[in-house]
Image (cartoon, rainbow, N blue to C red):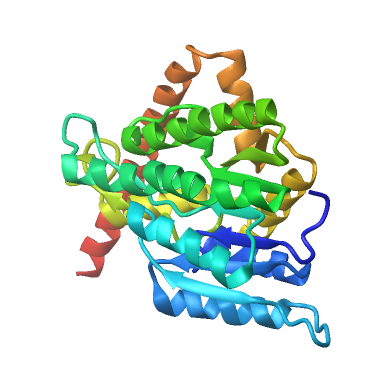
Length: 302
């Protein structure tokens, strides 16, 4: 798939971040859109931005449809896929992009939190793939794009739930790509591994109380520090993803942090874990010193 003109793309998590950027960039190329998100207001905004970005073609307006849904809801996803095919006539691409983050120790993790992140990050990808695949195959030419993470390449303490879902997406998508290659059905698949992307995922993440004192000084500090590692814009990430689809890449790495992580995991598949522990301890010491200095300043002011 070398261009997206007059194609139909379905995007989850389209209300913000990479999902919104994908929608706008695809619209600029004349791609019709089926957009989904849990947030109705932000989803409507994305649809407006995409419509404004679309080329003005007389007699052939860009078709943009929206659906408020939870990707963890299997029935809702299958209904949306059928609805998209009915409204647009065909479907060529699905971007299973919706995702959430969770920070917790394994010992202190609540099963409800683990089920929440698995439902969205992993089952959301599975539902989107299985719901849309028959329609994409019927179109004769298509692509499935599943978002994993840099944490689908290497593991991080305090991120076991997130790691588990993103490693699962990677394995699922790589197997899918091999099956599609064997089928020779005109459909392909790509697994995307973003590094730190400037989206709202850090501020909306769940941080368990057990992380405070173990790796974090406080919850907000943890979110703010996590966000400092976001070095790539959502627009740049979307550009790289679409370029990867054009080139039919099996794996797309986004950002130099993702490339470094990939290199570490391949070069030091076991030893990298000790390096991560050392760096985490160092960052914890720095955060502790910063918190103590802030407390001293507040004490003097008082």
